Image (cartoon, rainbow, N blue to C red):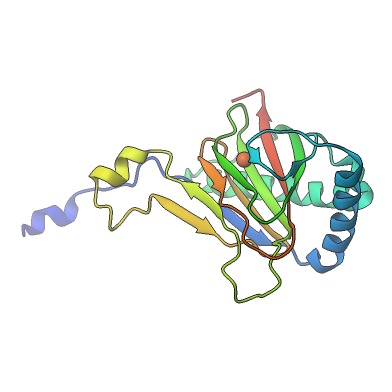
Length: 209
Ligand SMILES: [Fe+2]
């Protein structure tokens, strides 16, 4: 091949950022979150959104989780700030101070419950924090979060061996996942042996977008 082409330029366009972090204080935080969420689930009928079965709290500020809720919200805000700065780094830019609005809600899935494929239009980042993966055996695969390529045509036409169309993320206690709100996602039917408990959230940069 021509050595001349060594001087050519290339770039990857339309990348999709993904951030994951396991928070160090999860072992202390999660029993308190679990207790508060299950107590609230026992008192309120919940809402039906993308969940098929399962319990979905009202969206808001996790007031029913008290201090533990405020701490997990702080984690959401910290990861959002971190991810936004890393994203700006990639473009060799520095973000000006940003104002964010957020809402969060808790999910409890019994075996067999699932969430249909969906996106969160109207937000900037979306994410989830795992309180309890709902699986007793650590070697079990668990019930993953299923992220799907926002451009489904890509994988049916362009080197499918290189570009994954679906990514499965195994939940673990304290894991927080953050992705752009346009990424389609779903939760497969829960196959663990106890309730799977998570807290989902949206972060919206104001003024949007
Ligand atoms: Fe979602």
